[in-house]
Image 1 (cartoon, helix red, strand yellow):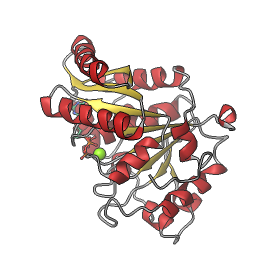
Image 2 (cartoon, protein in one colour):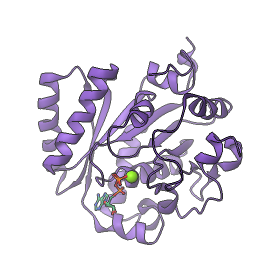
Image 3 (cartoon, rainbow, N blue to C red):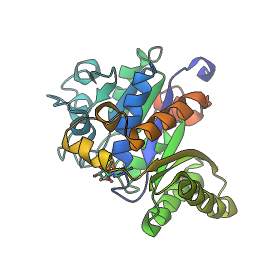
Image 4 (cartoon, rainbow, N blue to C red):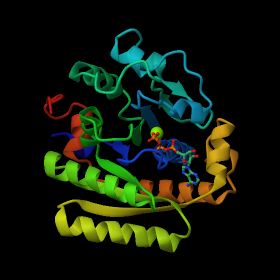
Length: 272
Ligand SMILES: Nc1ncnc2c1ncn2[C@@H]1O[C@H](COP(=O)(O)OP(=O)(O)OP(=O)(O)O)[C@@H](O)[C@H]1O
Ligand SMILES: [Mg+2]
């Protein structure tokens, strides 16, 4: 196995419940990583509401759908933003989630082979819910970042996602971000409660990546179609996002077989 040589880490965002800030975090974390000179590619696999391009102010002529349909090569569809981030835009409503086939995924992996040396991170933004297609992307990563908020529904849905990953797929590398919290202490407290429950029933290895404050600048940045870390660098949210990016970059996440699967290094695209 050649995973020792693989420098790129694949990070997939998940939540279970919708609207908890996955796409906002995926976009801003990716921009913060790129601005910290980490080669980063953000792939938006949310076909329902592909918002990452909008949040980045990119108006793509082509999307991931064109790549998986074989109409345009990956390299032509991928865009580089002003911050140096590479984006593979998703398409809104064009292709229902669940129709990306194994061949489609293989096309993505093959296109990325030539980029492995240049990329430190591939960040994958997924749709809410636990559809099979989403689970396939989550389990083909080195680490899943679960976004959690203080709402009980978010807690339960995040737990259900972590449970499904662990018990059905044997996937246990999970980091948690507590979003929209009132203070760092309440973020830590939220993670501790989540960890207590998960540690009792699941084999998952949960790590706390950190928290993000509830900050209106996040919403205002979306209205202006720019990432919060670029538009409002002085905001508390931007500071938190930069901190999360540095923590992630400093963590030396080990390569796992999930990431190997993503790059087709192990049983290319097991049907799963
Ligand atoms: N830390 C925060 N403070 C304030 N508002 C936030 C924060 N994080 C996200 N939001 C807001 O929450 C809303 C939902 O965010 P976002 O679209 O990123 O969630 P999502 O989990 O990707 O949703 P979906 O499930 O629809 O994909 C947006 O209006 C965003 O501005
Ligand atoms: Mg989203």
